[in-house]
Length: 216
Image 1 (tube, one colour):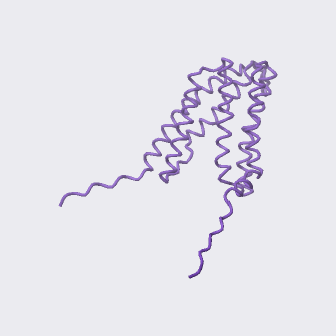
Image 2: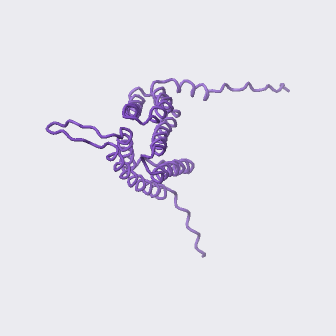
Image 3: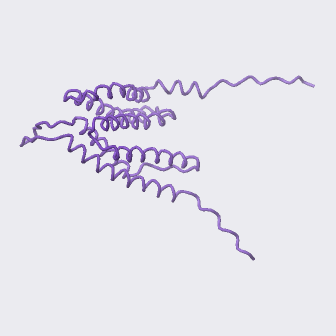
């Protein structure tokens, strides 16, 4: 009888893969977006025109790197599981930080922020449940409009103050805080509507239960 051989433990391949994935260029850009959040909140807290303008530039830079890291991941074929997790997380964190700071400064109603953040948590939970059921819910058109309006609204509210803006044939004074507030309210409508779309897509994609057998 041959003696039993103890199996050698397998190397933690998944962990090493995750470590390599962490240091590719798209994921580094995502990490950079997360890293600037404390600096962004600190600068915005001063609430003077220069600080608000710098905070708005940081937020705009984060939005641009969000687009850039997605393009790089596809072009360089560096799409990873870790990146798919971190990218939306970084977006939600910096948006949440901006909304919380704007609420602290009294520039946005707390009820609006609660509704926007609650929607994000609910849809994230719904997508998690859908994955467990083998259902993939793609981003809806309403969700894309929500994101665009929300980013534009927050950007305007971050600038906050009124400035004279030169257009091609005219010069006008724009109250960026007021414009941003209206855009954020419109994004709230789009946010709630897209949530309905996600729930409808989830419900439609669920497999139908088998019909009960008819008695013979």
